[in-house]
Length: 127
Image 1 (cartoon, rainbow, N blue to C red):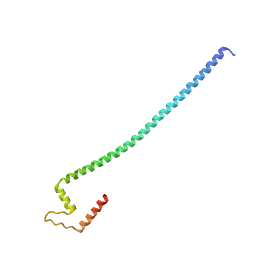
Image 2: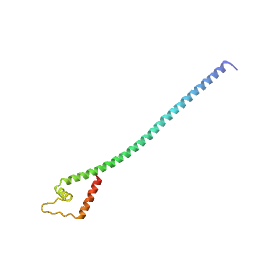
Image 3: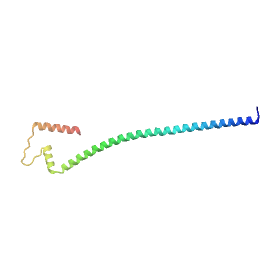
Image 4: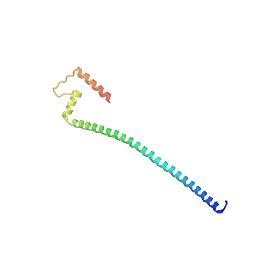
């Protein structure tokens, strides 16, 4: 049966198959694009989480360092206040440099010299 109706029906079926093929092809490309976009977003999220964790570690380290500096600053302020006191300076001078008041005699004991040498060695090692 080779008539006009059969040929037009076959042409419509061929056109529908062709259209169906293009629709499937477009859907496949759209799905691939969606997977790529979502994959990129997920990778970006994990990278940002990793970066955030690293920054939090740095923040904790900086906070600890800040506390140490604050403690050092408090110690230094206390030393400054002590050094403003004349009596403390006199006491320190007598102790460190063996200075004496008028009429006062200083006796150095051998153990004192040994301790002083050890203290000087510790100070030199710290520097």
